[in-house]
Image (cartoon, rainbow, N blue to C red):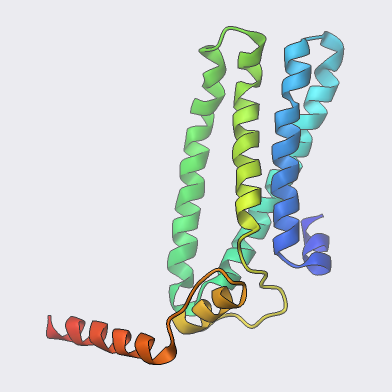
Length: 177
């Protein structure tokens, strides 16, 4: 599904769609959990699995999209930090699931799913501020990365003369050390 969406709609829209899908269906899990009927177990499972589909698609998309936004000189570092952050999130997952032990009501059982859903929805909405990278050449330098962000209106870049003077000053300071 993610591969087809990437070819058809670029990077940004499928990522936002998959994160928001995940968030909305996980938040919707509160209803069958609070109602607590045995007949709603299938609905809860369906909603949770739809959330899994959304987050799995977004996980695959985010690595591709992140690599396309970052200049070549920094690409490995940024992807390494992103991988580290994802592993920290994976390590915290069991702790968030255990939150249901501290809330004794039926709402406590839905608390982890709602928390994951809110975070996923917030990430999907935050991704709407990032640039679309499909069909563009990858940035090779920091300046090209700045230009990509500037085209989307996400970054205000100083004029070239001021930026060059600032860069020259920084390299002079580094060489003096």
